[in-house]
Length: 123
Image: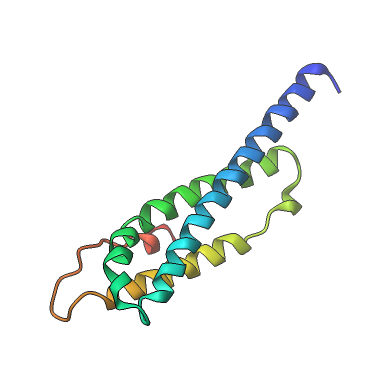
């Protein structure tokens, strides 16, 4: 393998590592919001804080998808597609769906929702 080819593999490997770290960070943020959302039923005083942070869910979903797509692209370039697992997408989608259900439950009956949930438009 030539120096240029090795340098390109090294570069893509670094990009893959970066995308994985960013994707993991986003998953951690979503799990943190989920932990707060789980507390809403037993600790109503956290409802306001949860509502504020839940507004970030669409942005986090978009960021997650961007980084996950990057991971997939870099794995394809490195011919390591077998290392890709769709489990993270399923987990994040489930967490966000659960969180949106909690957020929607906090909206008083008869009041129009203030959040525009866009997660299903990317299907």
